[in-house]
Image 1: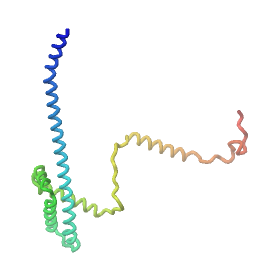
Image 2 (image 1 turned 135 degrees about the horizontal axis):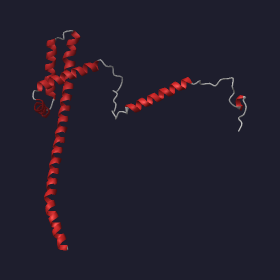
Image 3 (image 1 turned 90 degrees about the vertical axis):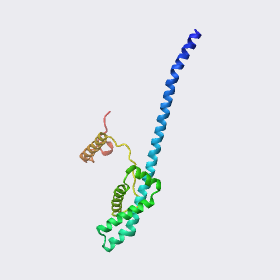
Image 4 (image 1 turned 120 degrees about the horizontal axis):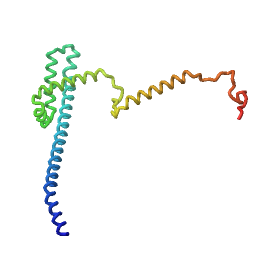
Length: 190
């Protein structure tokens, strides 16, 4: 009997080892791929944040040193606008790290198209911010799961109904009928 169990155990181990080894190899490959994707994603975020910072700084710099003066003197023309865009592109490229530039060239191909679109978007954002009055720190909100619309509607309906009923019921008792012995009425019979 012991010999039979020993032989059976050996057969199971011999059959299980390749399956387990295959599963381990597959798991290691999946882990390596996941780590690679995560690393690539983190690098992409880093490079895009660097590019966004450089573009924001470049637009602010060109606005302060070039555009604002032309606007004050009333000589801001279409040609000046194109010159400002060229200056912002040049300044943004100068502010970016070499790794960021290489990433953008690889990811987007034509850097000029990418920079023009991002600079125009940043100009729009800065114009909107210029027309906004800030009174202290900007308000930030954390978005959480939205409440169920049905629950909100039911709660609102119940509160409205309670307010209507409360306003419909007279708030003072009539003066002609006393309620109890303290008011001059008869004591209740028990």
